[in-house]
Length: 260
Image (cartoon, helix red, strand yellow):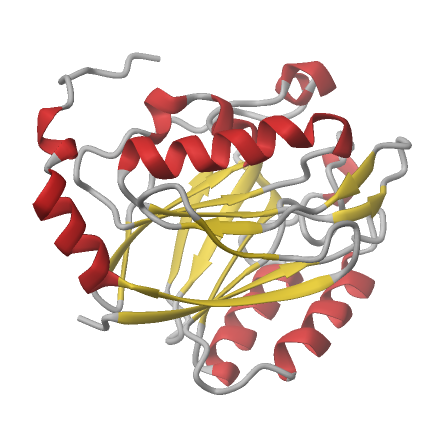
């Protein structure tokens, strides 16, 4: 087990539906990072922005963006996380990728599709949550709108770090801040939310508020509001386990079953 996990979150602008431009930007940012970094997290749909045009932008599982993620993880000896639009079996998915340093791929399809933007008309909802085992840490990666649904995020003592990648607009940023803190507190887990900045093709503005909270809901690191920024933070598993053992909150929670 690695006690210290060195995490980087890249709060970026995203050029609309231009994967090659966005990949070049992230490549430049990641190449500057120190060799001590364990995990790099990118925003939701980091190659295109939050587009409802999957017919034009979707890639396959053998597409260039995934190949870039695998190559980047291997070359830099780190894990890489972010979501991409994927076409599979004639369906489209907002799919999160967790790429291990050896190139091993794990995926999660967004469960809660954002009906306000008609995401549910264009994409297929995921059915299973993902728990990644990485360097002795159990990590639960989720996507944007999932943040509003605490049952789906509920920690039944399965994970140590909760990750949300997002395109969350400025107009509702107070909810983002509040819910990230709430998810950390109720699940006794580190919780990190990685959001974008800038304006998309639909005129929505994003101001970031990328942040990481500890298991007591205390904000331990955050980015500069409204600007492209790289957040770097170290989290400690022994501190997490010690407090969980002392307070025992997760052992007192109600049992439940999620049905589709």
